[in-house]
Image (tube, rainbow over all chains, first blue to last red; front, side):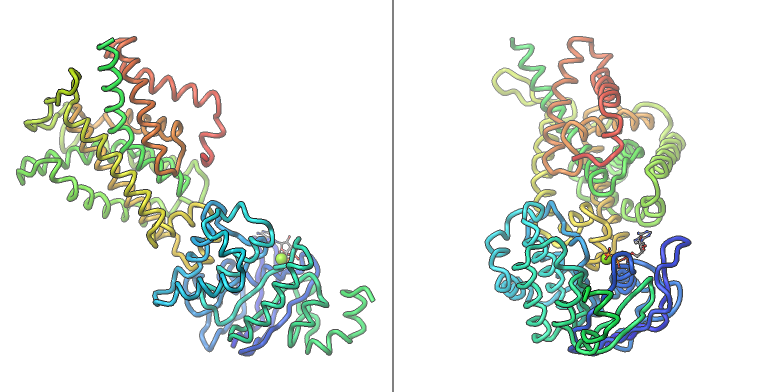
Length: 233
Length: 287
Ligand SMILES: Nc1ncnc2c1ncn2[C@@H]1O[C@H](COP(=O)(O)OP(=O)(O)OP(=O)(O)O)[C@@H](O)[C@H]1O
Ligand SMILES: [Mg+2]
């Protein structure tokens, strides 16, 4: 579904990603693991066209999307729930969700709103409240809901659980599995390596801007080096 | 007592023209962080367009308002898309420089085509007033205030409930998040400037109907819109109404206290005070 080939990029003169190659198949949950500053967010932003690749290519469902406009990429069915959420703080919850569906012209937007409120009843109760006044967990739900409103085929989730209570994190991660069951492929970036790999089918490890390891979740979880470096075992 | 009531009425009605003008200025500022120094010249140009339409088509300026709105809407879209968008994401100084240049070019083109002489639009109602409770309500200014109220409501409805309105609001709250939603920012910006140019033009028509104007009238109009926007807050639908009424009344009182030749003294005085009190706040995004 997504095939990244020898992708390199950075900011200004500073290179951040080196020769990234990564593949995601339809229906998978793939985890992307790496310490702070490894380049996970940079990779996701580059996939979304918010950062320009220096070299390499990105194919999504057979179409080259590397270096294309974000508009075009979103239209192809790719979406991201960004790290830090990026909500429109002064807009209501519902307007945030509707903005997520901006490129859609079909008649089922109302239905999808109801679907999101079904996932997150608290958002439904607060639908007319300004997004900036929500709690951290609710904001993350809103951000995730907003991405889902675009009906993405592939959803990139960047550190959803950052700073949230464990119970909320559990709920969000359970939902990720449910979303996948309903037909959305997932690239999952998480701080909690064990949690991420437990939900994912496969994983990639990013270190200093390079992919240094990849494999099935079970394989990675039992890898000695990974356990020492990321699980502290 | 009666004199002061009339002064109050004059001020409130003057708030209409000021407010429509600020509706445009504040939208540009609030959404794009753009301080459009050519704003006043756009308005004067609209007044000249009203003159031309009256002369050549025989269409009354007030009836020509929809046409003038559309012309400026289209023109505004092109100006933003092809000109201002090129510098809008660089620093504020560049956009100031560009709009200052646009103002300069527009003012001089108007001198070329219309001479530097003062003009006024001659309509049967231009100098007439309605009389209510023994007070004078100049027709044009009264209509301007009504227009301001209606336009504020329409703008609010548009921004709050329409799809493009939501896009404009989202973009004003964060450019990168808006891009992530699949919005084409250059088009959102162009739409914003188109809309505000249309609004500015409506204000310009009312200004032309109630004042003699020349190509040099743009400067004070820009300053007025600037002050009203700061008083009312940038990027809000009701700020221009509030700010317009405040400045209108202050101006009216000022022109009685200091004499009618100093009609702009309050406006410029406020500008100076604002610049001294919050020089940083002025050049950042307000509210
Ligand atoms: N906008 C930017 N301009 C310049 N450098 C940046 C920018 N964003 C990130 N970087 C740098 O790029 C490198 C990778 O950052 P990135 O945010 O992609 O890492 P990350 O793996 O997402 O980290 P985290 O776990 O903290 O989110 C870091 O060294 C960071 O300082
Ligand atoms: Mg990150």
